[in-house]
Image 1 (cartoon, rainbow, N blue to C red):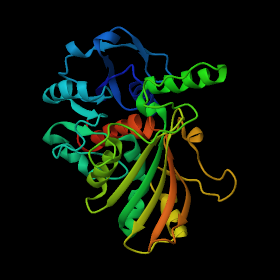
Image 2: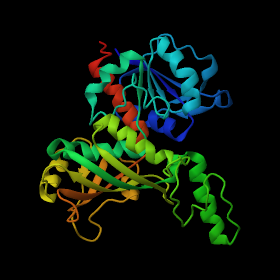
Image 3: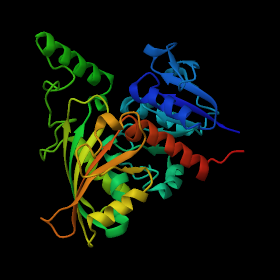
Image 4: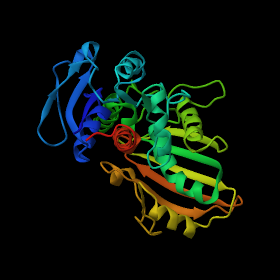
Length: 341
C-alpha cells in the first residue's frame, strides 16, 4: 500500500525535479497530484521519464483530505496560505521555502545529518527543507563534526543561477547570447550583469551588511548541526546554470588530519569523495549536475589555525539542495512515522 502525494509548484524547476526524483527512486505512490497556481491549471507535467503526464490542479480549490504527503516547491507565499490547510487536513507538508525553517516547532531536516528530528513533525504536521547551500554543506560537515567537533566554519559559495528559478537561468542565457552578438545587456532578475561575471549578493541585505542568504546558512547550520558552531559565509552568484560549489574552511576542537578526514568522508552517507590531487582530479558543477551526491574534493590541512581543514564541496542544487532532499524526507517519514502496508 502506497502514499498519496501532492507536488505543489509542479510547473517550476524544483517541482519538476521532485516529480523526476519521486519516479527515479520509486517512491511508493498510489497517486500523485500536480498542484500549481490558477495560471497553470490544466498544464501538463511529466511524472519522471515514464511519459505519464499529469494535469495541474488549481491549489485554490485543491482538497487536501486523504492526501498523505505534500511536497511544497511554490515559495513562501503559497506555503504561508496553503501549508497550514494541508497540515490541518492530516497531510504532512515538506516545504522547500524559507518560511518555516526557523520555526521552533518545525523540524529542519537533512536525512543524512539529523534524521532523529523527523519525529518532531507532529507538532505542526510540517517539515522544512533547508536552503540549497546549507543542505550540501551540512552533509559534508556532519561526519567530520562527529569525529573531531567543529568550532568554526568559513564558507564562500559559488551558487548557480538555477537557485533563482527559471527566470535566473533565462537571464544568463539571454545575456550570454546578447554579448556574443554585440547587443546591450540589461540586468532584470539580478542586480548586475550575470553573464561572464560574478555577483557577491544573494537575497536582501541585512543591517549588519550580510545578506539574507548568508544569514540562512548561519542559522540553519546551527539548527541542524548544533548551536555552538560558529559560521561566517559569503554567498556569490556565478554564471553556472546548475550546481552550487562551496570553498569551506573548518576549525575543529580536536586534531584531525587530511588523510583521516578523507577516510571518514569516503564512508559517509550521501558523499562522493573525488580527490586525486592532479589535473582534473576534483569535481565541478558540470559533473555534479543531474547527480544526487554531494561531492567533496581538495581536502587539505590548513596550517594557519590549530586543527584546521579546507575542502571543496559541489552538489546539484535542484536535487540535494531541494527536490532530492524533500523526497528523502518523505522516505524517512514513511520508514519512521507514516508506515503503511
